[in-house]
Image 1 (tube, helix red, strand yellow):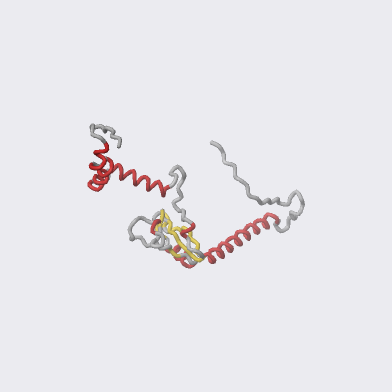
Image 2: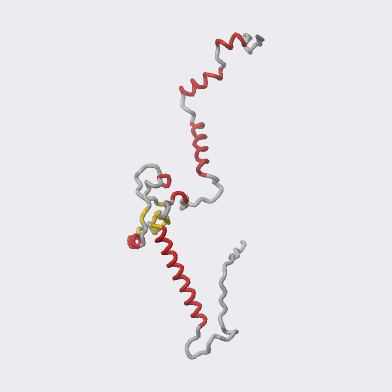
Length: 189
């Protein structure tokens, strides 16, 4: 067996059987004897926060609800609870009549601060509410039908002429209504 000198001058073969290397057992003993430093604890917590905060450079949507939170067959929407710090009981009654109910905080505990003192999920004067998806789809269909009827009524008003005046059937007097969607130009400062 080849013997090489260590820094103290004793052969390694002699030390190998009797003495532990300094890095083997002493770190375990020290770790159990003392708490981690505040700096180490802060570094661990920062790493943990980075894991679920994501990229902090981008804007944050305070009202984002992950799609996997929404149960199958239900729809979630944020509804107004307060307006300028004042509750509006008449509006809350209207919401209940339309089928909206508050989502219990116990269903999504990560959406509220620690502790079970909150019954519902609230943010910035808004409350997360739920109702069956089929009722929400019916309500949206009714809203679309009402909006289309309003547009048709305005088109009819533009095309009609008051009694006793000439009609607007002539090419030069007939209103030109075009429908389309396009980007609105944003002025540069």
